Image 1: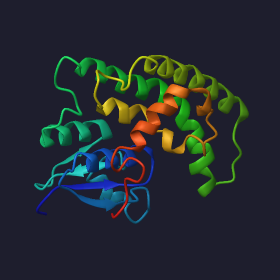
Image 2: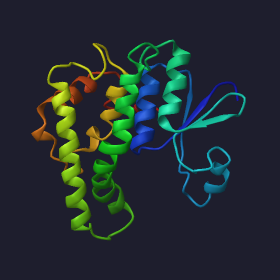
Image 3: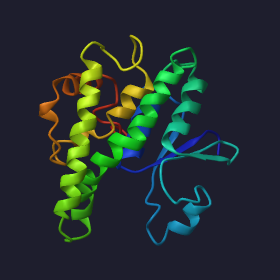
Image 4: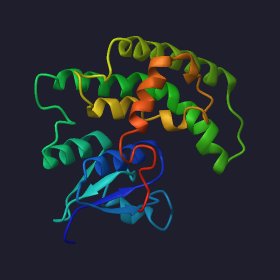
Length: 206
């Protein structure tokens, strides 16, 4: 192995990781993986004991998993301020944490039940779960919409990794039947990201 390899799949976090890595012009080999496939699971466990992607395998064979950690390393390696290193870093981390603990758990249920599960199961949605998580998503999307009313980007005046992170669900939001049209600033922010290289199609040419 002469350079690092990023193992990925088309799902939410791996998609985010590939998009940002390519935005950073990281010098990587990209390998599509299916870590839950019975023929790959045990071998993949040596790369990540959680048997999930994304995983960054360095040239020396060491690995780093979890999307945010990988992007932190790649951003620092690229000399980019996408992962803030200045006084704006705590604000950026606030939005990463908020997304992980609030926005994503609410929206991810709808992504899974309406996009992922139908590919392997005909188990119906649980209406109570869908209604509860929808109300939470609406609440959190409102928080994001309010924040963006007076800001072009989430942190400071420039694009940061926080912008990518809060938009993880947006490429799938309509298919997941999330009511994003009710949040004009979230839509405006998503449109700005659509103009960023590789966000609309992270896997082009891979």
